Image 1 (spheres, helix red, strand yellow):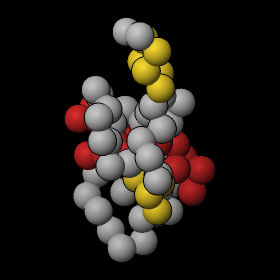
Image 2: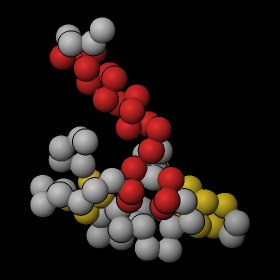
Image 3: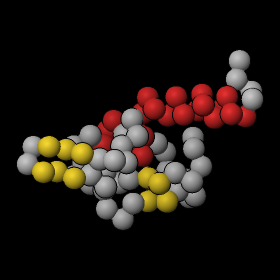
Image 4: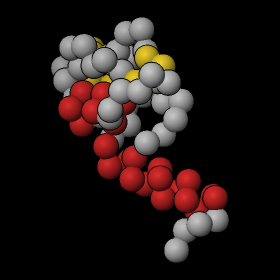
Length: 71
């Protein structure tokens, strides 16, 4: 899990169950958005802070590469 992640409580967010900022386990070191950062305009949903759960795996692979311990 990423340290210093800004988490989201996902209040009223329609895709919170697919976002790593909501689904990852809480730690005492996490920061939190004051409000869920999404915008609903009519039927259009946007969230510039969305972090898909699958994106976490990709992020960890990139971190491993940057550390030089990738296989």
